[in-house]
Image (cartoon, rainbow over all chains, first blue to last red; front, side, top):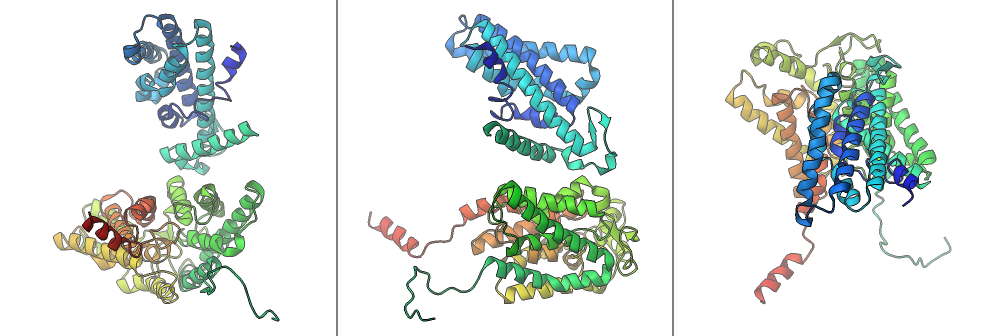
Length: 194
Length: 339
């Protein structure tokens, strides 16, 4: 398989958020600002790459019937590492993301790549796939976070563009996440098909 | 007319009913409330009504022409009705920019994203209003004082609505009889001499408009009667249980947007159920949710939320309460007995 294509498919052709609509829970839950979206995306990328590596290495030793529980255990170990590292070195981000960090364990994207890709492909391809998908996920979350932050509180990455009083509060809240995601998805798919 | 024989497919007799005819009927029915609004709120009401209608019609035309690349259907009047209803749901001192955002949301998100008139699951004007209410809570809940602020727009003097007086008073521990002296008399509430959104205060004007809609058969009685009836019954029960914390039914019908909602917003063809029983269930749902939000919720007014929530249930009600086709029942009975 062409490794470059394998890497770039996560950004545009098979973007986990805008095309496959996987991992909606963190996508809608933590993207109230661009920084939160980026942090969540990078944490997921780390877990995705590491779990893809391990799954690709041990795929021949796991019996077919217990593969899902085994994948979950592998993923959960890396999520625990991310959680502890983040709590130690990035306490502010850890506070902001809160419950959504342990929830990376049940992110469909991570489990989906382990099941659909890493358990069927070589170690090299799995690393590239995890990296591409993870960065595509981070890109989507950052975009959504930036749109919501801009419309909701007049800032991008904490940089004030216009007074917060004119921001539309709904975009900081949950309904705004759904509206923004819907229109971003429509826009990306329009561009993708053009 | 030299053609003596016209050959055409059925139907051959047409009642002359059309979308524009119904929409302009709704606009005529809203005129008394508009007049009342202009009388009590003056220049502010004029500015927001014109802005809202113009913005809704403009966005409908713009999006249909340049984004969807279809023939704009502005002339059917539905965008103008949305604009008028949106204005009626806004305070008359709201900045112009917010009206334009509300119009863009109502038409763009509420209506055209779902495929335009006939396909929108939620009442577009209410989508615009609730979007603004959640986004700009301060500007959306400062209500001009009627009559004294007739010549002022943004700088109008403001006061609380009867509903928020009751809500804050009760949560501060005052009783209803004490609070009744702080709110306008029921006569003033009936003619519309109270603070509130542009078109929701004048009970008498809204009832006149509602009677016109019923007379012209633009709406049936089912939805308005079930909405107002369930508000009266529910608040009546609460009032009987404890008159010192729950206001009486007449207050709840006259205050806020119950009349406007019952006659003009809930009866929107597209977003309300099709069968008669379905309409009754839908209306009772709106009435009950309105009272729940007003009495137990954190917002003082809940009509717009209640209508949007029941809009979401409309497809389900339509599936559950399908009208029986003629002869269907006999057929199933026969099929069972012959077995």
